Image 1 (tube, one colour):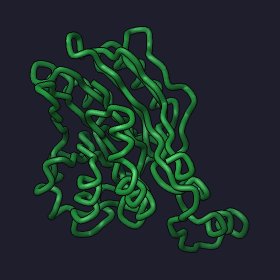
Image 2 (cartoon, one colour):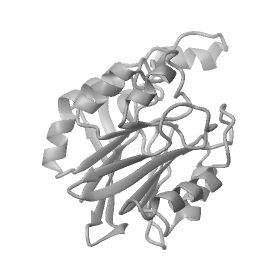
Image 3 (cartoon, helix red, strand yellow):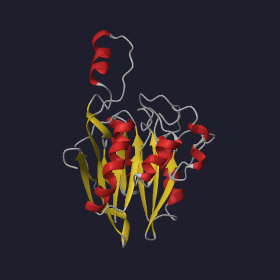
Length: 263
């Protein structure tokens, strides 16, 4: 069984790329399930029911979110109707939406959830370590495999939770910083790990945004809008392969990149 996990989908370019290419990518690489972070899918900040359904139609099975979960003002009223979307699990329990997903393929069940980091992040959230431990305990007898996303700013916090969960889940991957890291591997306890998957969107950009506008902020310090860029679009993520006879820990783990000129 192969599971594709994708870094943050950024704006219309990221959505359009998945709509045009993901179905073929799934066939070419024998992908059984796809999980994508969609927190930047609507205009580069937040998500809506419309854009979430667009990703679902493009063959994304499960959508996770991050610190921009509520950036689109009506999404709090929409999320409960989206069975394939989960919000970060360590937000206050009063927040709407699921705090986990259970995805199923040919009788195998995969639990998926996201925790937000607390270093240099805006939302006030519960401890990601204790939240992850609680959800793993709640899921372990309900699913065959567990995937954990840590949506965080610092590599140290991401690496720490990777080591903390080593041997307890199939995969820990990081998102939020939009730049893929080169440390993808299987840890000694058997858990696959990568600090950041990167993004699904335009690489001719600054983190998916217009280059000149972002540079201008650094050059003169003046506030300005940074629209989503459009050049060199592709997906970045990882592929996890698990053995149905022993699905708790992975057989293999590979970083992936699929760009317009190779699609």
